[in-house]
Image (cartoon, rainbow, N blue to C red; front, side):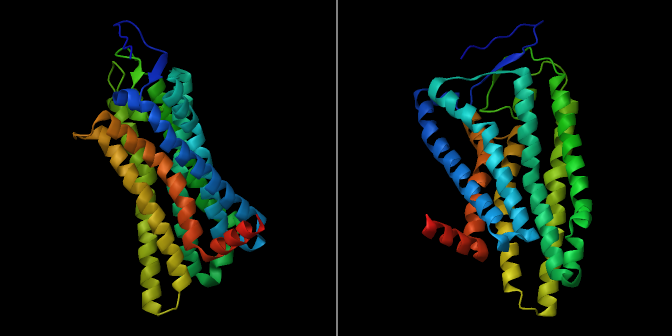
Length: 310
């Protein structure tokens, strides 16, 4: 791979060379990643179709699951097709503007994964702990109060992070050791001070997924305490909560490993770091619709009916 550098040049075109150390084995990565991409598109499309077409699945909880499927459907489209073309044909070029656009789309849409889990936790909290007021709180005008603040937060933080990255000068190299424009993978190529970029990246990670995780955890603690204290037979509700917890745990595990791999000293090889970062985005898109389909009785029943008709 050609590695250009010059002291007075700021590169505006880059090459994405994730997994380049695999050499002649790199093209074979097309097969597993294509299959995962196909699974993500197919599973999430079916889930969205079922929720839209079945009136019995139009309650707030299923609408939120449907929105999660939409996010999981859209997110891989921002980077997987280019990654697959890179594996097959070594098409790895991207402009700085294209890189920043891709970075914003991935981080902004990706932030919805934790934000939607937060909304689901609130939905379960109102359904179990405040059942008499559930429909009042979940009416669109009232629920928008819980929606607007996270949306503004996600937008401001991601716009700030991407804008600061775009102001850097990249004179060290034009080779990004990644399969897509991940924030730290690009920022590390800058030849100036990147401390403010690191700080904004940390704040974004703390104020979006970490803050959401804290609120989600607190909500489920209150929910389980309420159920066990009252002795209610809320098996269905608890089962739904466990489904959300499984999805949240899998997403946050990959997110935490991907985040720490760039910010602390570790023995991660470049290919391992790229793999974890890629799985952080792609694995939930494949895993979530299967979990919701298997563990949610109503969706499972509608899916089986759908298969019989086909």
